[in-house]
Image (tube, rainbow, N blue to C red; front, side, top):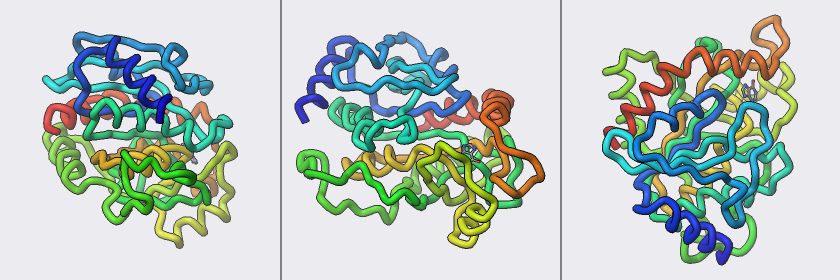
Length: 269
Ligand code: HPA
């Protein structure tokens, strides 16, 4: 708890008024933070207790500012479990945001499409998730001041925020899919047999992020929304191998509409 408070105090000194909402920007979306007004930027490496991001194409900094009249904080670059961080390190920023008073969180990511009606480039509201890792950032002593020992996860993704995302997609004329996101540690992509199994389990998309942050946010009562960019069809659906380049290229291709959607959502939440 003391490191969380130390990081919180450090950020309050540098960023001024507390943000109302936090956004985690996934692959290709990082540039959205540049569009914030009155920006104050803090590098992760300067923040007490913050891990440092190592993935190519991910920056490692918080951008505080206003967008659509809302005070927001953007994470440009997130921490992945596959990088070797503990689950607690992955969600450390969420705990710091909570200590700053953040009440809403929007998480974005790149994901592989399992649902065969999806196309690369589609955006998907995450309606629910399957944690397929057998790990959980809340294992260990409970942060009693933040939330209960056994947090409810029956509405992990806020219906109210999902409605706003749907309204924004309609008004911005952006096609939107909806579905269940299945979380794996990575870093290897899945096998075709795994993808067939996950489809039977009810997953529509698969990825290597988001769920730890959503678990931590729900624990401390932060209302959460998740949006995936389907960057590729999951293994075995098409006759082509998967690669990170394709993921980045698709994310880059849709970043304009993805950014428009997120900007609209921020204005309305
Ligand atoms: N699998 C897992 N994670 C991913 C994928 C995928 O196909 N695409 C983007 N992130």
